[in-house]
Amino acid sequence: MENISLILSDLDGTLFRNDKSFSDFTKKTISEIQKKGILFGISTSRALVNVKNFLNGINPDILITNGGGIVFSGTSREPIYSCEFSVAETRAIIKKIFEVYGGDAIISVDNATALYSNSKEELGDKFWTFNDFSDFNEKAMKICVESLDKEKILQVASVIGLEEIDYHAFSDIPWYKLSKKGVTKEKAIEALCEKIKISPENVVSFGDDFNDIGMLQFCGKGIAMKNAIPEVKAIADEICLSNEEDGVAKWITENLKKSIKEKLWLYKYLEQIKTLIAKKRKCGLRNVASHFNLSI
Image (cartoon, rainbow, N blue to C red):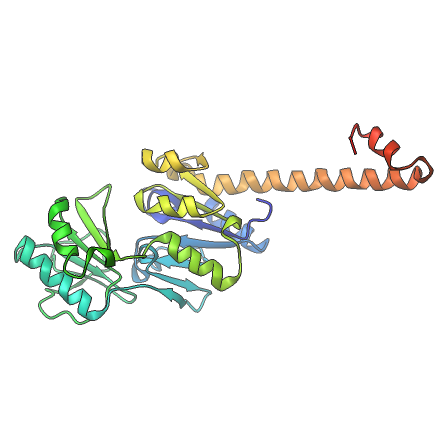
């Protein structure tokens, strides 16, 4: 943990247990590292309106939401970075979805303030606002469509140009996500590091799914959960315990203890050298070095 300035964790399948809760151990661990001056942040595809309802007992210094679409810093939750579709782009994409998939296409739209869907059925968490998208006039950070048909997704993306849009399939549900080119967790972290003047090398990140791969590769240390998909494990620097086993908190605790032990060892070692030098000034530095079996 030496030289670590910021720890970032995904939520679902990572910091969350399967029931979308945090253990008391996780809450305590996060609080302890924050007291030691290490920043802690959440990096998730969820929107802010969704995330803030789950943060019981945790007060992150940084919130990266909407898959990297927006970054909030501090308790004021003021945005310090955002990347989103314009109103015109959002309207064009929604129109194209209905043209390609038909009028019964199921769509959801996330932006900085709300979650919208044209499905009257419950979509997982209960933070959605119904909208039939017949006259939608807001920006969007993420537009999702219920589909596994990549060819149709490419048709939709082409309406504003493939060079302007990213598209990714979810690993756990039959949906595709469309976002502005450059809306990734790693791009958001890059902007964040520039803003708060820290090096990505001093950032540790945890994740489990496709949209965490770039984040784990970008940060100084990228850690996959034991329950992560194979593609994430393949690129990770380390693999920790699963989300059900408090993997993030246990990795932090173990590595914090290790760092403290290393610092104590180094401190004691340097004190020994200082004492020996003081006693053997007349012997010269080479004799001191030989005492410790060092070559100089």
